[in-house]
Length: 413
Image (cartoon, rainbow, N blue to C red; front, side, top):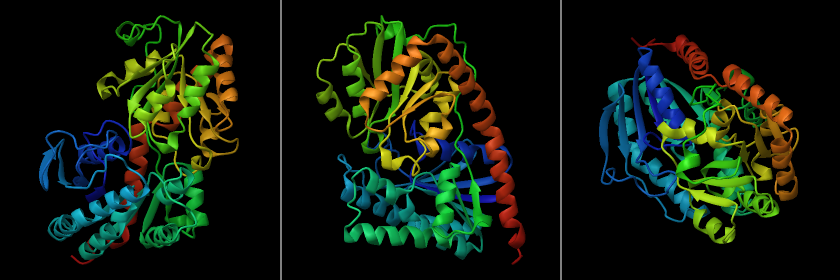
């Protein structure tokens, strides 16, 4: 197959959607397919262009994938309106490169990744110009997530326009995929026929079983003296609700056996540090390299996955896959019955979003009940193997891609 991938985020961004877009493109290339990517310049999660990527359009070949990286507006303070401009800048920046690539490369399939949905119509048009099939993969329902996290007022004219735009764009594509059963069910509710929907999960990026008897090197590097660590690692932004971690740390400050570690970067980091004050049982650490991710995750006794209530079925945090793969229980904030709550069932504890008392109690329960910890840890490793395997996931999606292009595969030839 000849596949053109369009996505705002791509390597070398170390976390989030970029990891999966790059992983998919490189795996497709490994399997003998010809892959080209049109993406934005790397900026996430710092919301600052990575050094060496300033300037205009640039095309390189990396790991057998040809990548055109396009200049974009990156706001230092990404509020609702600035994010809209950010996404619009990507759509405008890719318009010529993607059209030219579609006409010269003649792909069989154009795969658009959302976010950014703003670029999806251009990807769809490129597919039409190339007489290719179109596929939209939804990592986040951007509009509803913006409502849930307060970035957009759901009653504003902009919000109503954005909701209509989202539904219309999604309906254009020959195939639409998303990363969880609940997000796929949402597509059905939006009017997308079930036979056009594919579940395409993210995958665990580390080996499912770690040598748990070996202590993490971060214990020494960060001078962690307590036997237990409650770890949050990832982006620090609106939808995470990380203030619950601060509140839980304050509630458990009299326990001398737990250190809370927040390891990450993002637009809310400065405020979070200020709110934490001089808490003695809490450490802030910068985002760590992908190469050291297994060692970082092994530091945790329990992983922390806070999330705002209204975002539970609109996004499925990509960090969950590696949390489970590390063989550690998870404490998440998710209403029972939501997709996130179901994903961690028997691998951790889901508590009411925003309820720091319940969140702290769940952390204590897992630390104090060793038998429960062992059971959930084993279940987490097993789930990572059976549900979040990279090669099996991509193989299934490749089969769906081949199926969708088959009816018109070079009929014009």
